Amino acid sequence: MHREQLKNDPKLTSPLVLAFLGDATYAHFVRFHLIAKGLVKPNQLHKQANRYVSAAAQANILLQLMPMLTEEEAAIVRRGRNSKSGSTAKNASIIDYRHATAFEALIGYLSLTGEETRMAELLEKAFAIVEGAHE
Image (tube, rainbow, N blue to C red; front, side, top):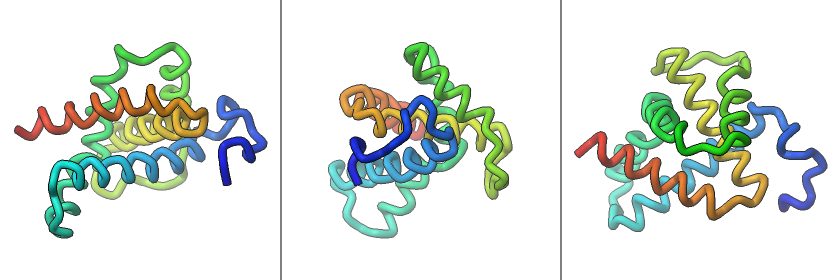
């Protein structure tokens, strides 16, 4: 299925649906990023990927990206943060979990709207944030 086949306006799509898409999209880009850096051992890839995809990491990324977001992107983030998922965070505080959901909603929104250049820009900054925090 392609974006053109979706019937809903991305701005009207549930933030939890955006987060569902954003979670998969972000994980894909993280894995690609790690492989491009030369990591090849599965255990090492998994361990490193967790540094990027944990709720705490995503919450930190979002908080640092907030000043760079457009008004439209900030609105998506607010919707994602305020959505009630019905599930609970396993290894994260509720605040980190909500911010991570908001980050994923933003990535899902950018993916759904075809904003690949903007998404790549924000993901590059996200990776730099994670890598700067762990050096």
